[in-house]
Length: 182
Image (cartoon, rainbow, N blue to C red; front, side, top):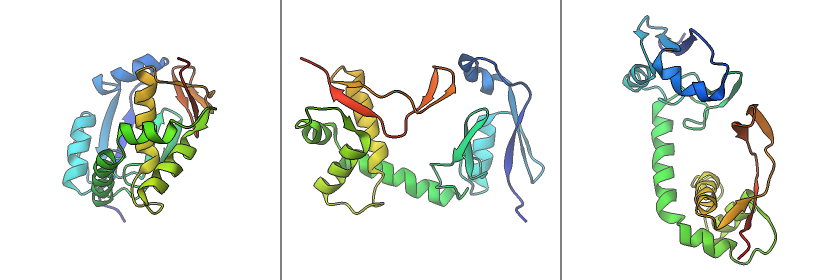
Protein backbone atom coordinates (compact mmCIF):
# COMPACT_ATOMS: atom_id res chain seq x y z
CA UNK A 1 0.00 0.00 0.00
CA UNK A 2 1.19 3.51 -0.81
CA UNK A 3 2.55 5.46 2.16
CA UNK A 4 2.27 8.79 0.39
CA UNK A 5 -0.53 10.21 -1.68
CA UNK A 6 -1.48 13.83 -1.44
CA UNK A 7 -5.14 14.72 -1.83
CA UNK A 8 -6.77 18.10 -2.10
CA UNK A 9 -9.60 18.82 0.27
CA UNK A 10 -12.14 21.32 -1.01
CA UNK A 11 -13.37 23.75 1.57
CA UNK A 12 -15.43 25.64 -0.97
CA UNK A 13 -15.86 25.23 -4.72
CA UNK A 14 -15.97 28.54 -6.56
CA UNK A 15 -19.00 29.12 -8.79
CA UNK A 16 -17.20 31.31 -11.29
CA UNK A 17 -14.15 30.35 -13.35
CA UNK A 18 -12.53 33.66 -12.39
CA UNK A 19 -12.57 32.55 -8.76
CA UNK A 20 -10.17 29.71 -9.57
CA UNK A 21 -7.33 32.15 -8.90
CA UNK A 22 -8.55 32.26 -5.30
CA UNK A 23 -8.13 28.49 -4.78
CA UNK A 24 -4.59 28.92 -3.50
CA UNK A 25 -5.85 31.75 -1.33
CA UNK A 26 -7.73 29.40 0.95
CA UNK A 27 -10.22 27.22 -0.90
CA UNK A 28 -8.04 24.08 -0.75
CA UNK A 29 -6.00 22.34 1.86
CA UNK A 30 -3.94 19.20 1.24
CA UNK A 31 -3.40 15.98 3.16
CA UNK A 32 -0.81 13.26 2.54
CA UNK A 33 -1.43 9.62 3.50
CA UNK A 34 1.65 9.87 5.71
CA UNK A 35 -0.43 12.19 7.91
CA UNK A 36 1.18 15.46 6.87
CA UNK A 37 -1.28 18.35 6.63
CA UNK A 38 -0.27 20.87 3.96
CA UNK A 39 -1.73 24.34 4.05
CA UNK A 40 -1.52 25.27 0.37
CA UNK A 41 -0.53 24.13 -3.11
CA UNK A 42 3.09 25.26 -2.71
CA UNK A 43 3.52 23.19 0.45
CA UNK A 44 1.89 20.21 -1.29
CA UNK A 45 4.24 20.50 -4.29
CA UNK A 46 7.31 20.73 -2.03
CA UNK A 47 6.17 17.67 -0.09
CA UNK A 48 5.52 15.80 -3.34
CA UNK A 49 9.05 16.57 -4.56
CA UNK A 50 10.51 15.40 -1.23
CA UNK A 51 8.74 12.03 -1.49
CA UNK A 52 9.56 11.56 -5.22
CA UNK A 53 6.03 12.26 -6.46
CA UNK A 54 4.94 14.30 -9.44
CA UNK A 55 4.53 17.93 -8.39
CA UNK A 56 1.77 18.52 -10.96
CA UNK A 57 -0.67 15.77 -9.90
CA UNK A 58 0.86 15.34 -6.43
CA UNK A 59 1.24 11.61 -7.08
CA UNK A 60 -2.45 11.05 -7.80
CA UNK A 61 -1.81 10.17 -11.51
CA UNK A 62 -4.65 12.44 -12.63
CA UNK A 63 -4.91 16.20 -12.71
CA UNK A 64 -8.10 18.10 -12.13
CA UNK A 65 -8.21 20.75 -14.86
CA UNK A 66 -11.30 22.34 -13.32
CA UNK A 67 -13.60 20.93 -10.66
CA UNK A 68 -15.45 18.03 -12.23
CA UNK A 69 -13.05 17.49 -15.16
CA UNK A 70 -9.98 15.31 -14.64
CA UNK A 71 -7.53 13.75 -17.06
CA UNK A 72 -4.43 11.60 -16.86
CA UNK A 73 -1.55 13.75 -15.67
CA UNK A 74 0.37 15.05 -18.67
CA UNK A 75 3.47 15.87 -16.62
CA UNK A 76 4.16 12.30 -15.41
CA UNK A 77 2.20 10.30 -18.02
CA UNK A 78 -0.20 9.17 -15.33
CA UNK A 79 2.47 7.44 -13.22
CA UNK A 80 2.48 9.83 -10.27
CA UNK A 81 6.30 9.61 -10.14
CA UNK A 82 8.73 12.52 -10.05
CA UNK A 83 11.40 10.85 -12.22
CA UNK A 84 8.97 10.54 -15.15
CA UNK A 85 7.99 14.18 -14.67
CA UNK A 86 11.65 15.25 -14.79
CA UNK A 87 12.23 13.30 -18.01
CA UNK A 88 9.15 15.02 -19.50
CA UNK A 89 10.44 18.45 -18.46
CA UNK A 90 13.82 17.76 -20.07
CA UNK A 91 12.12 16.56 -23.26
CA UNK A 92 10.03 19.76 -23.32
CA UNK A 93 13.18 21.85 -22.95
CA UNK A 94 14.83 19.95 -25.79
CA UNK A 95 11.73 20.40 -27.96
CA UNK A 96 11.85 24.16 -27.34
CA UNK A 97 15.38 24.32 -28.73
CA UNK A 98 14.69 22.08 -31.74
CA UNK A 99 11.20 23.28 -32.71
CA UNK A 100 11.62 26.99 -33.23
CA UNK A 101 9.09 29.59 -34.28
CA UNK A 102 10.93 29.96 -37.59
CA UNK A 103 10.69 26.20 -38.25
CA UNK A 104 6.93 26.21 -37.61
CA UNK A 105 6.51 29.31 -39.81
CA UNK A 106 8.38 27.49 -42.59
CA UNK A 107 6.15 24.41 -42.20
CA UNK A 108 2.87 26.35 -42.27
CA UNK A 109 3.88 28.80 -45.03
CA UNK A 110 2.55 26.60 -47.90
CA UNK A 111 -0.88 26.10 -46.28
CA UNK A 112 -3.55 28.17 -48.00
CA UNK A 113 -6.50 26.50 -46.25
CA UNK A 114 -7.06 26.03 -42.51
CA UNK A 115 -4.67 23.46 -41.02
CA UNK A 116 -4.90 21.21 -37.98
CA UNK A 117 -2.47 21.08 -35.10
CA UNK A 118 -1.82 17.40 -35.84
CA UNK A 119 -0.95 18.19 -39.49
CA UNK A 120 1.66 20.72 -38.45
CA UNK A 121 3.06 18.49 -35.68
CA UNK A 122 3.37 15.53 -38.06
CA UNK A 123 5.11 17.70 -40.68
CA UNK A 124 7.52 19.11 -38.08
CA UNK A 125 8.27 15.58 -36.81
CA UNK A 126 8.96 14.41 -40.39
CA UNK A 127 11.06 17.50 -41.18
CA UNK A 128 13.27 16.84 -38.15
CA UNK A 129 13.32 13.09 -38.71
CA UNK A 130 12.01 12.38 -35.21
CA UNK A 131 10.37 9.06 -34.36
CA UNK A 132 6.93 9.25 -32.73
CA UNK A 133 7.33 9.68 -28.97
CA UNK A 134 10.91 10.98 -29.12
CA UNK A 135 9.94 14.54 -28.12
CA UNK A 136 6.69 16.28 -27.16
CA UNK A 137 6.26 17.68 -30.67
CA UNK A 138 2.49 18.27 -30.44
CA UNK A 139 2.56 20.36 -27.26
CA UNK A 140 5.52 22.43 -28.50
CA UNK A 141 3.91 23.06 -31.91
CA UNK A 142 0.66 24.00 -30.13
CA UNK A 143 2.54 26.54 -28.02
CA UNK A 144 4.23 28.03 -31.09
CA UNK A 145 0.93 28.23 -33.00
CA UNK A 146 -0.72 29.93 -30.01
CA UNK A 147 2.13 32.46 -29.89
CA UNK A 148 1.70 33.15 -33.63
CA UNK A 149 -2.01 33.57 -32.97
CA UNK A 150 -1.24 36.04 -30.16
CA UNK A 151 0.92 38.13 -32.51
CA UNK A 152 -1.84 38.20 -35.14
CA UNK A 153 -0.12 35.99 -37.73
CA UNK A 154 -2.71 33.22 -37.32
CA UNK A 155 -6.32 33.01 -36.33
CA UNK A 156 -7.92 30.07 -34.54
CA UNK A 157 -10.91 28.94 -36.60
CA UNK A 158 -12.09 25.93 -34.54
CA UNK A 159 -14.97 25.80 -32.14
CA UNK A 160 -14.08 24.28 -28.76
CA UNK A 161 -14.67 20.54 -28.37
CA UNK A 162 -15.82 21.01 -24.78
CA UNK A 163 -16.84 23.90 -22.56
CA UNK A 164 -15.34 22.96 -19.19
CA UNK A 165 -16.57 26.00 -17.28
CA UNK A 166 -18.69 27.98 -19.65
CA UNK A 167 -16.95 30.01 -22.34
CA UNK A 168 -13.96 30.95 -20.15
CA UNK A 169 -12.31 27.51 -19.88
CA UNK A 170 -12.58 25.39 -23.02
CA UNK A 171 -10.93 22.30 -24.47
CA UNK A 172 -9.66 21.93 -28.04
CA UNK A 173 -8.56 18.45 -29.12
CA UNK A 174 -7.14 19.11 -32.62
CA UNK A 175 -7.83 22.76 -33.44
CA UNK A 176 -7.63 24.44 -36.84
CA UNK A 177 -5.75 27.66 -37.58
CA UNK A 178 -5.37 29.71 -40.72
CA UNK A 179 -3.14 32.54 -41.80
CA UNK A 180 -4.48 36.01 -41.08
CA UNK A 181 -5.52 37.70 -44.34
CA UNK A 182 -2.99 40.33 -45.34
